[in-house]
Image (cartoon, rainbow, N blue to C red):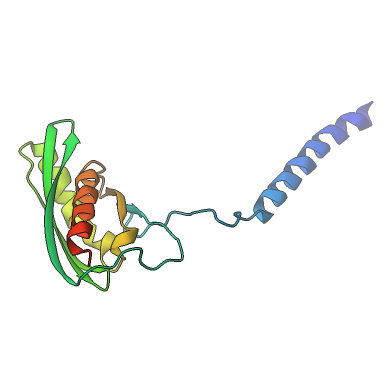
Amino acid sequence: MNNQRAKYPFAILTGLTLVGALAGCSSAAEGDTTTTDTGTTDSSESTTDSTDAATTGSYADGTYTEDADYQSPNGTENVEVTVTLADGVITAVEVVGDGDNPNSKRYQTAFADGIADVVEGVNIDEISVDKVAGSSLTSDGFNAAIEEIKADAAS
């Protein structure tokens, strides 16, 4: 009886080790999409679609400006986004917030200070910003402005 008790923990440990080893050997199925953090700092996050197509749209080179509204706990906020495109790639970006509330101003400023690290050098069709420098709501306005800029730049 004592010998059987000693085998029980050993069997559990062996089973857990086997499960862990098999999990480590698994790979993603073909066709799965992944998200990539394109930010260079811990405070910036962005997701991009990792499909093989380099560009899904054709855009005229130039500098484009659009503004867009988004909702925050303080009401409707607005950001103005200016991007410079070259071959569909964002080479420069500027974001100007129009927040009246101190919290809104703080988040918009943090977003504006960190967005270049996230989107410069990235194809505009791959841009979908989630959060930058702790600001997750400003990204809604930024993404809406990017969609308008894509329409403006479409050739």
